[in-house]
Image (cartoon, rainbow, N blue to C red; front, side):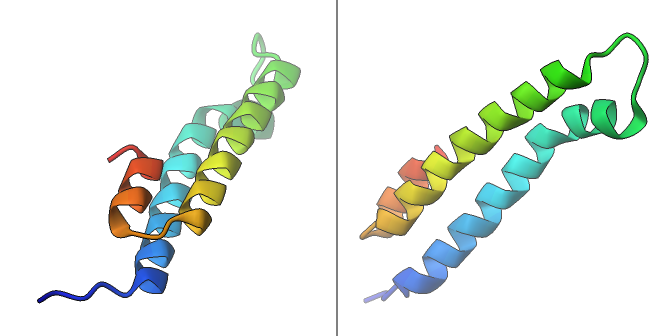
Length: 77
């Protein structure tokens, strides 16, 4: 029988969540960091706020998970 350490599974889930969030942030970070003309930093920051909210919800779901399947569901995998 295989026994999965739920705490370690949650840590792995959080690492995957952070990596996915970073990928979604990249195009908006570029706009804000480089102040690219023709791109509105306010819009980029609003998009970043929406991404943060999305991943905060996923973080809460992972923390509340009681099985690896629930962690996978929270991550959408």
